[in-house]
Length: 213
Image 1 (cartoon, rainbow, N blue to C red):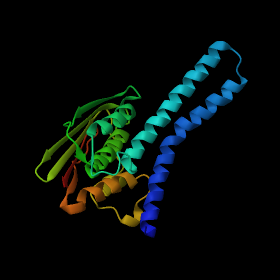
Image 2: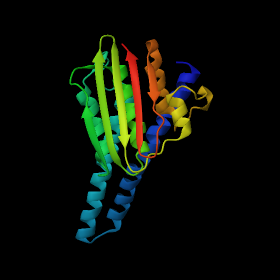
Image 3: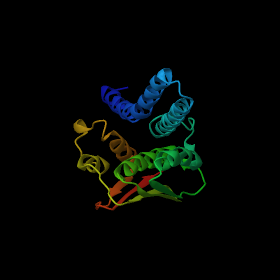
């Protein structure tokens, strides 16, 4: 593994740690409260907090294991139901965002699934006040198309992330914020594919990928 690959893996780890910090911190706070609390009702609330935080941490780990790691086995294809199982809790857990899923049931190339997951991650982050996240995919002869649409009252996507998605970002400038976007772009352009980002407005965002398989 080259130094560049190690550096990029470190950035992905930083993103993972950043996202896990909140639920793990909440579990720590819950345990501290539980140790000092003797009121039955308050202890029940502490246990509820621990359970919610533990589920949130587990959901994030499952998502990132498939998006960044080798989950799904070492085969060339992944069942898209696996992707939906890790996407749905991440998108809908806040109660502010609805998921619309239009992905055929047939197996998808693992590279396409990783692109789909990373694009979902970015689009979900952009829905700062919630909304609707639509995920679609279509397979044609030798090609896989993916479209992610986000709609909500406020959409915010950092310019550096947009540049990473379109390949305009200097590779030396990739950091933990832009690592997922850069990974999606690099995976998409392998073999002559492409990744496109419609110019986002304040309420809509569309990201599309055409993957040569």
